[in-house]
Length: 147
Length: 147
Image 1 (cartoon, chains in turn green, purple):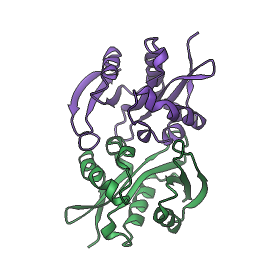
Image 2 (tube, rainbow over the protein chains, first blue to last red; image 1 turned 180 degrees about the vertical axis):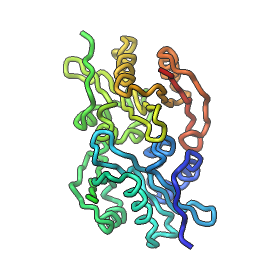
Image 3 (cartoon, rainbow over the protein chains, first blue to last red; image 1 turned 90 degrees about the horizontal axis):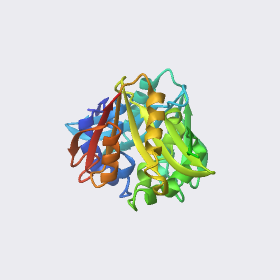
Image 4 (cartoon, each protein chain N blue to C red; image 1 turned 30 degrees about the vertical axis):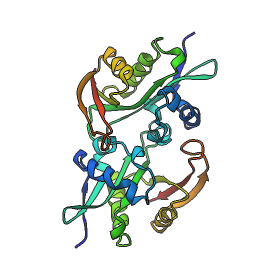
């Protein structure tokens, strides 16, 4: 059975934040994901569960600067279920949630080659790589998908 | 002359992120403030400048879960100009920007006693302290102001 996807709730945050560093291969990610996403962006953030266990999640929001844009801040899938299409299903829920917006942006670290490949497979284009995007030495690949 | 306050722009991010740890007394804050706030929440985020130098900033947004709420993620003032009322002026710009919303929330760390006192002076109430709000051991004071 496929993991079931539903809107994120504040109560989901503790489970997500407990696994996020591990799911990102040991990188220190937790500080970048404050609870506010699970409180104030609930209708565009999702969790996936299977047999009561967290299988994946996505945190995103509608841009408040650009009326036609939405932004995905984090998307993660349990390494044990990668390759199953869950990441794609999470993104499809997000695209539907932010309709009729047609531009979806995300950024990822260049060291996260799997993430870049995943986004390309979903139809994201690499706009550019900014070596200091999130501060000095904090390089990011800027991704965009036009729905 | 008082520092001039204007809407934040993506180009302001590099200056802010370069001082944020220092302004927070050496705590590691930068990872909690990704550039996205300067891109997608520009009309509710502000910078203050004096003589071309950054004097303060505020990053906030409208809740997308609660129609009457807004949230301030970061507010900082150069230690050299604290006590001048700039933090209050930044918040007043934010309150005006998110009108007619009437509930403004923020969280801060309990170790940041100056921040708790500042928010109380502005009319924020402490709702509660959550010892694990932003992850295990990441305690936060939950603040709310009703306009």
